[in-house]
Length: 403
View 1: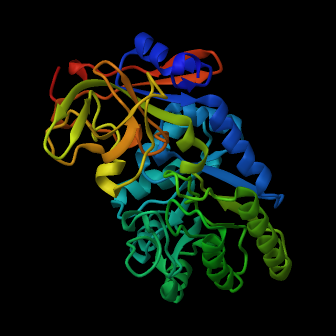
View 2: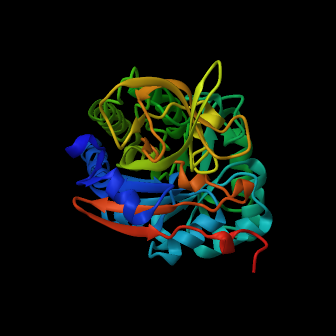
């Protein structure tokens, strides 16, 4: 930290903002590759296939980095399929799991030749009519859910996702009616999971179901691997996770009678900690209750605190060490909920300083919007001492309705 400034890779946040402006998403390529390799090395089961859950960040440079690291794509919309194909992924490298899709969207998915993962009985019926005899997988709701917030729990009775585990007999009847070949089973219980045991609990339910399906080629255990956002959180023990999953899956395959492929769909894990949102402090305002540190970004760029009450580390990138002040860091959007934190001790800010919001690589830009008619920020990739623009900053001309 030369000159008491935050470094991203080998470059200071201040030098990056002088070159590229603010607000600015910055990603560290070495961290992305490091996390991807750590996960791959931790899951030792030999027939493991990793699919990047690209909804977490669809920047094409990030997706290509993960393709280099051997990842395929977990897509949740026809648009994600189109985008993945357009940047070089092959149909066989893409798995689609969408919910509440229109019939024309399902027809598009089938036409592209990607793996189709049925999310509901209705979806199964529609796809059967579109292409009888198709090889598919089933997304199962295993009656287990977990995650860092109720909005990201994707399993259990309160979840809209998947075919309820007790409706599988109906699914089999529909599949038989249209000669659909069930070659895989899938589940995803939630996001931000930090305890391997939670994952294994859901896995056990899946394996009890899977043993009754003949002719399976793979089991997809979904994603949801979390990162420690707040200081008190314990990091996911990825080696323990990999060991437990590999050992249990190997034992299941011996019992099943053949080595199936194991699929996992990480999104947050390989990219979250690589990303930082940099914003310029534009205003400091005092009230009887708060010191508001205003910035030129807002929840239109990183909605996680407003939406999930999520914690993100925030530092004064211009001065990491120095006298601290209890402040509420906020954005420039005309909403009371436009906050990055409602109150935290941070090295004292001055106007013109750079606020760095950490762990912003996942579900930052991909959930960004143009609310208040504010354009989206630029994105930059850092590798060591080099930085390159990987998405240009929007201008007023990019706003909807402007020609």
